[in-house]
Amino acid sequence: MSTTLVTPAAFLPVTLEEIKLHLRVDGDDEDDLLEVYIPAAVAMCQQQINSSIMLQTWRLTLERFEDSVRLLNAPIQAIDAITYVDVNGATQTLDSGDYVLTGDTVTPADQWPEVKAGPGAVQITYKAGFSAGNEVAQQAAVPAAIKSWLMLTVGTMYANRESILAGVSVASIQGQFVDRLLDPYRVF
Image (tube, rainbow, N blue to C red; front, side, top):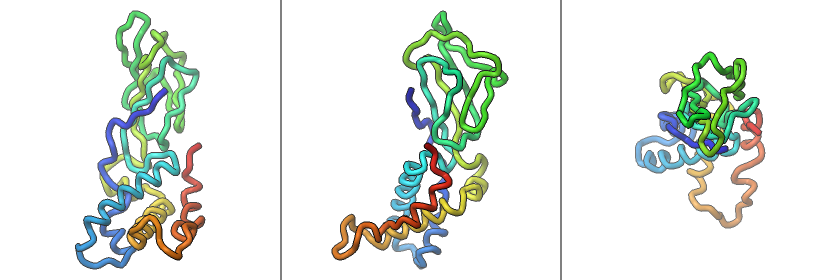
């Protein structure tokens, strides 16, 4: 079983303008630096919560169908396609009425078809993130706690541009409060 990113997010959950407002940065001198920090913070956040924040397309590859298939990087927005290799070796695509998506789990509407088991025998391509739609709609769907975590994390990177600071405790750089903002969104 493997999950591969097919299409990365087209948008960021926070804008450069929101970050600059949070940091009280005027002017454009630091824009290039902040545009490096924002996606880095987003990647760190997604890794911590095991979820996609903005809409992304993923592909789960299996050797065979399982009774139920849990998709990673929730929240799941939609399944684009489920393909499989039939017993004759031909690639088939399931009709959307042949399966049910409940939360992050896919189950057969009746039963899964027979497959020629092996690497890549089943592929499920799906969209994950807090919302579909345009940039504004996707950003509006991101929980405030995640946006806060992102702004605080970018602020920490901006204020502490070195990995080690003399006389500063590592724990004080990224405190427990900030990381606890992500707890309701962690997927295990």
